[in-house]
Length: 162
Ligand SMILES: Cc1cc2nc3c(=O)[nH]c(=O)nc-3n(C[C@H](O)[C@H](O)[C@H](O)COP(=O)(O)OP(=O)(O)OC[C@H]3O[C@@H](n4cnc5c(N)ncnc54)[C@H](O)[C@@H]3O)c2cc1C
Image 1 (cartoon, rainbow, N blue to C red):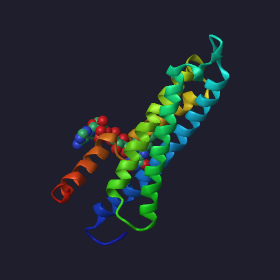
Image 2 (cartoon, protein in one colour; image 1 turned 180 degrees about the horizontal axis):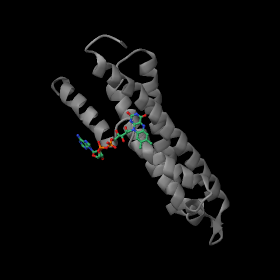
Image 3 (spheres, rainbow, N blue to C red; image 1 turned 90 degrees about the horizontal axis):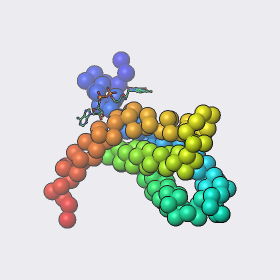
Image 4 (spheres, rainbow, N blue to C red; image 1 turned 180 degrees about the vertical axis):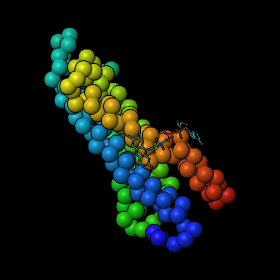
């Protein structure tokens, strides 16, 4: 017998809470890898007499990637800290996973766009990041399920919102 009788579902669901923070961290690691590769490439690759990062269309993608990455990392650290302090992370963990995995999706997608043909063909680290990132929006609960969890928490707290 693991745990107490009748508490099985609760126990199983509680493992998801920490698992979601771990997946958020995984999504961040993949995003960082794709972002670094794209930033290095964009600074080095020249077209029309300048680095492609100096073309606004590419520079803005990297500015957004840096911003999204920082925001996702802060949310993930907040959830991890709350878990370490023994607090309830059911909502915060769902938020961290949802935000980090979707930020990672955008960052990897833009990284491939920046590397263009070089990012699409194997072997290329961005191609690998692009594939690996996708699962972070699916396992330990899909993005739709994270939104469901968060929406329920919003409903529970609706009466106390000022
Ligand atoms: C590589 C890999 C490793 C995995 N590892 C594990 C593991 O170690 N342990 C484990 O337990 N599971 C694991 N899984 C399973 C994973 O958790 C499930 O794939 C995931 O929970 C989604 O379930 P499903 O694939 O059955 O999709 P479904 O539940 O069939 O969902 C299909 C679609 O409907 C949407 N949907 C379903 N219900 C709702 C709803 N109420 N509201 C809105 N949208 C909804 C989903 O978001 C999704 O878009 C793994 C999966 C993969 C691919």
